[in-house]
Image (cartoon, rainbow, N blue to C red):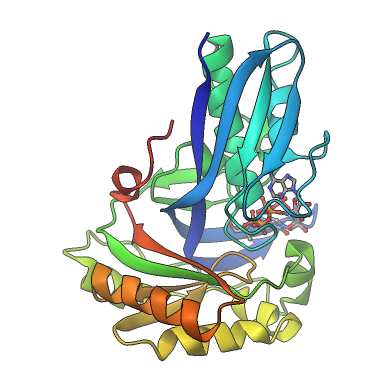
Length: 288
Ligand SMILES: C[C@](O)(CO)[C@H](O)COP(=O)(O)OP(=O)(O)OC[C@H]1O[C@@H](n2ccc(N)nc2=O)[C@H](O)[C@@H]1O
Ligand SMILES: Nc1ncnc2c1ncn2[C@@H]1O[C@H](COP(=O)(O)OP(=O)(O)OP(=O)(O)O)[C@@H](O)[C@H]1O
């Protein structure tokens, strides 16, 4: 069996409405998610036992032991042919773009191929992380429930810049700081004629976790202001529970120029650019 390579793209919550809370404390969400061509890479080589090595620009602090979501995901398939896994970490951890969840989903895809078994599904997958089900098939979707109810959505290419100020924000702390847990869901999603129509619709939606995240990490407000001030930026918003924010731009050229400008003015911040939407898959390196 040759090596298997999988790509774990960044997940972006274009809108994230918190609509309620379950008895177990988990929050009910209504979110529109899309994926970016930026992400982590995983390589699986057949081996005697499951082992994980992590390297890459964002590897610092990411565990290599059984607490890593990649090994937890692989373990769902039970005993059988094993792999030496290499995780090339390019997405900052604990940053609201689902790095660990997307890694776990990519590991589930790779292990299913390695073992020639069906892809894992169901509660065990949600238990890895509420974001894992949406990352299993990384295409635009409306997600409800706690993140496990998925409806595919067609989106036009959305030229985007992702920015993380390198402040880790803990997801439970942000949910805890949210005052109103019972907010209106997103509006019905129309068929978008083009990116401008999609961005105009998005501007009328919200991320309910943005205000509590800004209260915990005020630098997020600086990131949003920096994005909004860039030429061609049509909308700036936080993803997930933060701290990563995204800007949507009028063109790919404007997004590329904006990222270049940010890299010069605020070199300490992590950033990436590329199209979000159906075509992100084509723009990304080959992934399964
Ligand atoms: C904020 C989002 O990124 C939006 O896509 C996700 O809801 C979070 O997904 P995730 O990081 O995979 O979440 P998990 O690892 O399952 O949960 C982390 C913690 O976030 C809180 N949590 C998460 C998801 C959810 N629907 N309600 C919650 O209240 C819980 O306190 C939970 O203990
Ligand atoms: N493969 C992994 N990559 C990154 N972090 C991991 C991984 N596996 C376990 N972790 C742990 O999970 C924590 C959360 O990281 P993760 O990148 O999943 O958060 P996130 O980007 O906020 O996710 P989400 O958008 O789903 O809330 C990290 O602090 C890290 O210790």
